[in-house]
Length: 111
Length: 112
Image 1 (spheres, one colour):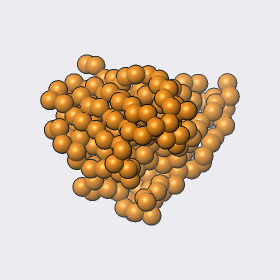
Image 2 (cartoon, each protein chain N blue to C red; image 1 turned 45 degrees about the vertical axis):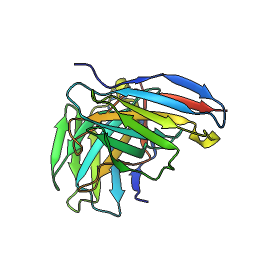
Image 3 (cartoon, rainbow over the protein chains, first blue to last red; image 1 turned 135 degrees about the vertical axis):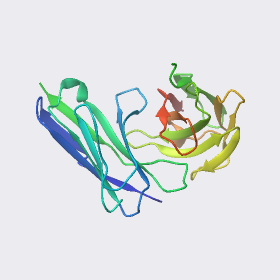
C-alpha cells in the first residue's frame, strides 16, 4: 500500500534549538497535513497545505508542500518543552477520502 | 464549540468478543473517519462515513463495520476480536468529505 517515509524517526535536542523534519512519498499527494500527538491523546492538526510550493506558518511552526508534490517539510523554531511529542505527516490523494500517515518523528527536548 | 469526543476511553475484551466504539463529531461536521493506530505506528484508515453512508474503506476485513447517525455521530463495531485488534482507535470529523480531519482522543482497546 501507499507509504510515507518520515524522517528522522526521533530527535533529541536542546531547548531553544530549531527542528526540521520531512516526509517523502513515491506517489503524488494533493494535500499534506502535519499533526502532533501527545501520549494518550489523539493527533492535533498543526498545518494544512494544499498547493505545490506552498509555505504556511502557524506561530513557530512552518511547513512547506514540496514542488514535486511528493514531499513536505516541517520546521519548528526556538523549541520549548511543550513541543515534545510525536509529529506525523499525512497525505491525501486527489479524490480520496483517507489520510495516509507517516510513521512519526518523536521529538525529545533537553531543558 | 465542542470538539470530537469518543467513548469509552479504555476497553478490555477477550478474543472472539464483539465491541462497539462511539464517536461524536465536532459541531458542524458531517463526515466521520475511523483509524486504527497500533503502538509506535501512524494511524491506518479503516473507513469514512458521509451523510450516513460509507464513503471509502481501507484494507480492513468485513468484521470491521460502522454506522453514522442523523446527528452525524458514529459507531465502529468489530466482531470476532483478535489479539492484533489491540490498538488505539481514533475517530476524526471534518466539515466535508475532503477537508481537514480533526481527531478525538481515541479509545484504547486491549484484546486478551
